[in-house]
Amino acid sequence: MDGEDEAAVVERYARFARDEAPGRSPLYEEWAAGVAADPDLARILARIPASRRQPPLVFAVSRMLGAPEAPFPAWATWVRAQADDLVAEGSVRRLQTNEPQRCAALLPGLATIDGPLALLELGASAGLCLFPDRYSYRYRRGASVVGLDPATGPSAVVLECDVTGDAPLRMPEVVWRAGIDLAPLDAADPDDRRFLESLVWPGERGRVERIAAALDIAAVDPPLLIAGDASDPEVLRRTAALAPPDATLVVTTPGVLPHVPRAGRERVIAAVTALDAVWITIDPPGLHEGVPSVDAEAWGGFALARDGAALAAVDPLGSFVHWRASRAGKTDAAH
Image 1 (cartoon, rainbow, N blue to C red):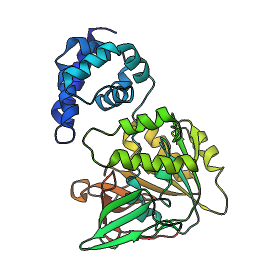
Image 2: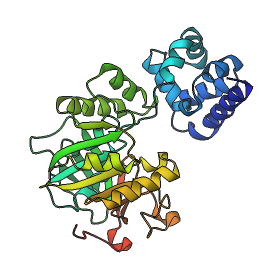
Image 3: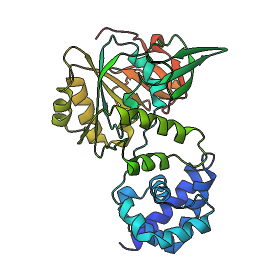
């Protein structure tokens, strides 16, 4: 560790306080600005590897370990007292936001595929987006609401979403679910549960309760989670080969590709498209050539796409779906 590390912490946290936290979390904005102005705190956080010291991650780890959700002076006092624990835990954790609300954006894409389905998610974290058939949905279409529930009845996880256009809305039939992640999380493990809940920014109402309810569902019937690099074609092929042959294999990448370096992202896309599988992804328009037909400036959201054809503009966290398949030039092409 040297002065360059401390300067990098100051710059990163100042930028976060200025550009990223405002309007979303006043507490994180205050904490980040405090770190940027406190050389002692910057020196402590500089002990965490550069790839693990993003403000949302460090703040989440501190809350997981018991830091108070209080004004900066109280939080800073806690950091100074628990510096070694924070550095140790922060050095092994990584950002793994696992938002089940994304299933509200995924479901219309899954509804274009005849079942039964075998789901394989890349970057699955604890696998909470592998249970689209276990959640309830309330799609708002103007003044009307389209309600979908699991066959067993209403779920403890209820996902609300605004929808426009002729989006297909029906529950998928999922018979197999698996995920690949560099460091999978266990929905039944108290530390992993607390970490996922701590990744929710203070002030984001309803998210902790939704994630906790989804973790309960995953803990009862855990998916197959493989620890590995999904950008390694062999890891992907070996996992895909485990899917039942009488189900349609569907590979999902809901929001993970922007976090994969370009070379790895290209390997993932090449490996996925080489499989006998349907690929459903949610990505920023223009991120890669897998969604070639979208005008990024006019699209109005992330792109929900199937096998490289954009279907809808969606909120990456699942709050809206604007179905545009006819404009994109592809609807329910047979697999």
